[in-house]
Image 1 (cartoon, rainbow, N blue to C red):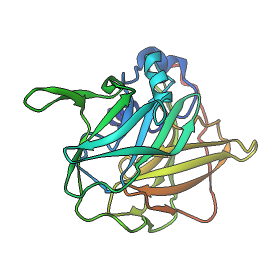
Image 2: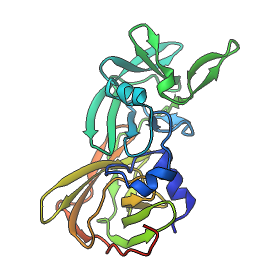
Image 3: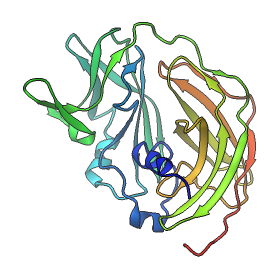
Image 4: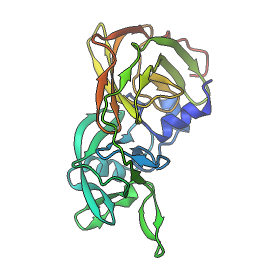
Length: 276
C-alpha cells in the first residue's frame, strides 16, 4: 500500500486527477471543499510574473456550486493579486478540461512589485467569492480573505528550467487496498531550476492515439502517472503501451521540454487481489 503522503497529495493538490472515478474509492475518499491553488499557502515567495494553477476534481464528492464557480474563473469571476500599493489581474494561459479534473493555468498580466506582499482575491461583480478557496482572517479588524499571501522575490528567475537528462521509468505499480486501486508509472525528475516548477505531461495510448494532458508536481523527486487510490491524473489500461512527453514550466513562466521525442512506457498489469 502506498504511504498516506501520496494519498494526501492526490487529495489536497488534485494536480494528478485526470481520470474517471473508481466507485470503491468514491465511497471512502472525499475531495476538498474548495478550489486548490498552486503555489500553496505554505509557499512564502513568488515570482514577478508568477504562474498559478487552479484545480478542481470531479471524481469525488464536491459541491456543484463550487464546480459552477470554477467554470467562471477568468471570466465572470475576476482573480487578481492585491497589495496595499498594487492590484494585478490574473489572465488565463491554459485550460485543461476533463471528466475527472479541470485545471486552469493563469499568470499575472504584468510584473508584480518586487519585495511586496500580495494576497489572492476573487470577485464576481461586487461580490467577494473567497468561499471558493481556503480562507481566513487578516489584520486587526479580522478582515475575511483567502489564506493565499506571498511576497515577491527581489530577483526574478529569468532562465528556463534545465533537464539534466531525459526522464526514465523507475517503476510501475499495481496494488489494491481497502480504499481503492493504485495503478501508476513513476519516472525520475532530473530537473534543475531556480524556482518551483510544474510539469505539463501528455500521455498518449499508442494503439488508439488517445491523449490526456495534466499539470504535475513532483513527489519525492518523481513524476507519477496513473491513479492513486482516491484520485489520479491518468487511468492506464492493463499492460498497454503509451508514450509520454514532459515540459517543465517554472514559477516565472519559463519553459523547457525534456526531450525532442515522446518517451515510451508500458503500464503495469492489473491483477485482482480480492479487494475489488
